[in-house]
Amino acid sequence: MLAVAGLGFAAANEPSKAATLVDEEAVAAQQRALDSLPELGPDTPTRSAVDPSLPARVLVVGDSQAWAIGSRLGELWGAANGVNIVPSPGVGCGIGELTPIIYLGVEYQNGRDGCREWREALPAILAKLQPQMVMVIGGFGDVADHQLPGSDEWQHIGEPGYDTWLSDQMRQFVDEMTAKGANVLWFSMPHVKPPRAAGTDPFAEEDPARNGPTAPEVLARVPAATPVFAKPVFGLADVPDIAAAIAASGRRTVVIAGMETDVCVAQSAIGLLDAGYRVAVVSDATFAPGEMHEHGITRVRDAGAVIVHAKGVYYEWVWTLAEARRFEESHPDLADPPGFSL
Image 1 (cartoon, rainbow, N blue to C red):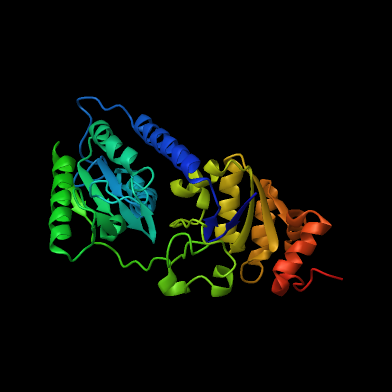
Image 2 (cartoon, rainbow, N blue to C red):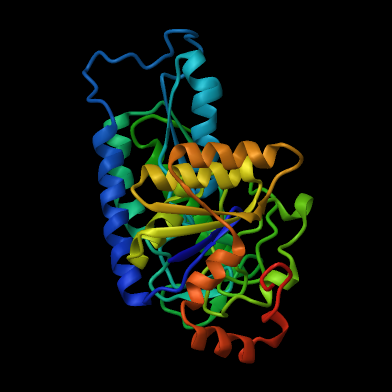
């Protein structure tokens, strides 16, 4: 089983197997993105039919922020104004050349999974979509520590050599995006307060400046090797990194806890059900204010999720009396939680 919380995803995987599966999924995802684009004829309009002052097609590139903002912008504004907004992000990827990187505390010697495939697919996506504008949103991967080509030293923003390298990379990227006449709108880097380090936080922290960090009582119970994924949307199944990691685990049952029951938990559960997983929602380990909790539970039950309770899950996981006794001995502070014993 996998344990999934409403604010993130945690699972331990075999790294080499996971990386291979993630790379394969990244290639497939980029091919699907390319195949989904319409074939444009020589007389395809370049201006919006609703407002000729607007472009007909906009490509949104960058990291997960580009994916979240571009998707929502297309839904809320693009369709109504006759602008086809197409997100094509590299989740967790920077604009700079793929080099060794320390991303959220974890070192990736070959760059982040899926980033190479994203960069290699961009020219074909650009050529097929023929956008009049390219929006660049994100940049967290570019302000992380990197080993630049020809150097074993870790460098970062503010060091002259790194600043020169990154400026050159950004200019090259703009040249690539504008080669067919598109304009580039480059968003400034938003304020980001990342988790302590990937592998030490159990869940992604959603808007920590507003909501606060993950509870330390939860952090203390998670294995050090647990990977961390940002969740910029409410339903975790719609985040490519998380979906790929779940697939890489090989497990088909997902147990969900967290909050809020009617938002993150419900949307995550339904997304996973749609993807073919068996989903169990822990009713007394999920929360939403007032009657919203029951609304969420009703919705996921109607969608096909199994509703369970924490005590039942605990005894299914320990499975035998011997394992229950072993757990009690190794975790005396957790051996008798309220409501678990007569």
